[in-house]
Length: 138
Image (tube, rainbow, N blue to C red; front, top):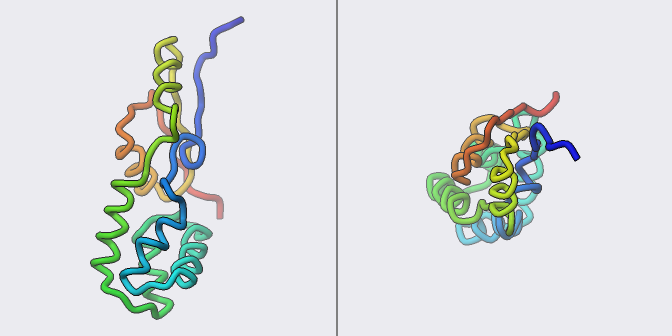
């Protein structure tokens, strides 16, 4: 069998995720005065946007919809959530190490807001041989 020339992987919901998913976001925002159903509605709009999701856009949508909150506190809470909850799925680090040990390049391909995707990649602390970030189609 011929050795692969590269392994190409997707980021979100393949290699990594927010532990607790969207529910954890809603739980984080509720104590700040943002009810689950309104936070969920705004999140769905932020995810569906052409620019790709990021927390700043999510906050802008909630503000534009007339929701009331201390937006600095919301931004801090979402950043803390990101720092504590965005992680590789179990066994991903072992899988990546096994592929790398075989001398096979690892290429990451992901779509979304370029800055947010890069922040997630940086947060994970793993260096891929190449990374391609594309925006979502319009």
